[in-house]
Amino acid sequence: MSPRVCVRGVTVRFGGLIAVNDVGFEAAAGEIIGLIGPNGAGKTTLFSTLVGLVRPAAGSISLDGARIEGRKPHVIARAGMTKTFQNTALFPGMSLLDNVMTAAVVREDLKSARRTAEACLERVGLRKAALANVADLTFPQKALAELARALAVKPRVLLLDEVMAALTPAEMDEVMATMRSLRDEDGMTLLVVEHHMRAIMRLCERILVLNFGRLIADGPPSCVSADPDVIRAYLGQDHAHHA
Ligand SMILES: Nc1ncnc2c1ncn2[C@@H]1O[C@H](COP(=O)(O)OP(=O)(O)OP(=O)(O)O)[C@@H](O)[C@H]1O
Ligand SMILES: [Mg+2]
Image (cartoon, rainbow, N blue to C red):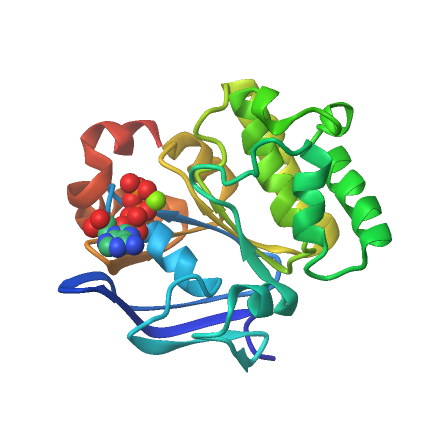
């Protein structure tokens, strides 16, 4: 069986800058994988490339065996992979429900999109805020709304870019429980970018580390957090102790 996601030799250039440099990894169905690394390492760019927002200069990306690199975002979303936005990209002036529906219509007609959107809001605990204007949502609610919007395309692979950044520890626990249920009940594959190391170490059974666009480690949290290269590049002594 082919892996759910297969990335080989992916390189992304912005002019003279190599933001992602010859990155390769595989992800199986039902894996929760962390993607960490310092600011500017290329995490968001790699996610954007996976979902078709950025075109790679080289390399291949497969989803359940089908090549998708360079395809349009809505094509890749329909094929089953989508991402959240690091700084939420909700449409201002629209209700939360309408925002989530705009994602669901990628796959469905309006009527079933509404049901999907309601179910996704329920899933992230925002059902009561469905008719609120997104401008009136709190920071954590916006993060959950971003998650609901990604879920509305019913992905098999979900890429989460710092959705927990604005959350309190208790809210983080709730979001992590939701992430685990997406894996356990829906068999989803999750790739999770977070700077919050304790959360990543608890949530993920495997961690990828990017540094200056290169993948410098790929393994279980215990190995990655003890890796001298990773400690030097990102974690530092402090993080290694608390991880
Ligand atoms: N659209 C763009 N045009 C030009 N350069 C870009 C673009 N997007 C990202 N970059 C550059 O590519 C590199 C990787 O950026 P990226 O946003 O992927 O990093 P990141 O790992 O997500 O960082 P952070 O942890 O701060 O979110 C950085 O040097 C950044 O300045
Ligand atoms: Mg980023």
